[in-house]
Length: 230
Image 1 (cartoon, helix red, strand yellow):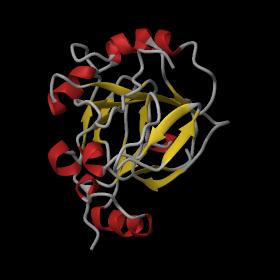
Image 2: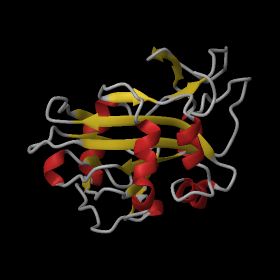
Image 3: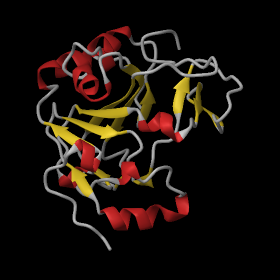
Image 4: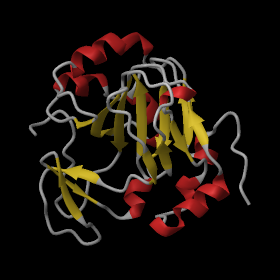
């Protein structure tokens, strides 16, 4: 049976919560930090000390993550999504299942490995993902016509969802469109099922997405992060 998602989401229950206007005052600074990035739809951000300084736990963005997973958390991956009329893609329902590390090492329970934009990505044990949070900082407004992220509320508690059962899990949990104004932040449980349609009235839709973790990796693996060398 499909459940109707609540109008106001709660993080513990639904795996997502909306922080209206939380980053509005620092949007110009974020724009400056991202100005030199290449012009493509999804850019993995590394070696960006200026951006890293904006994401510490004593700032308006990092404080949201710290309130959820503890004061020792830090940004471990950042991406910029820049959707426009010319790059108006759709994304099917899925879970984020990989992390980015400095180097590949033999590590029980980690794999498969991939390389994206020259960076080492690996699927960790699910329990590791379940201890992380993801923030999406909206640099532009996202009304319903401009391809908001859609989530399946509560699906973060479903564990690692097999690809052939994703549609069934989404039907059970329902879906919610995460609308936003420029400067809003959405906080998610990293494993939540999510998707995005093509915009029906496309306009520029930039989203800075940051994963936070409050722990070191085992087996000698190291987070790549965003403030060190690429």
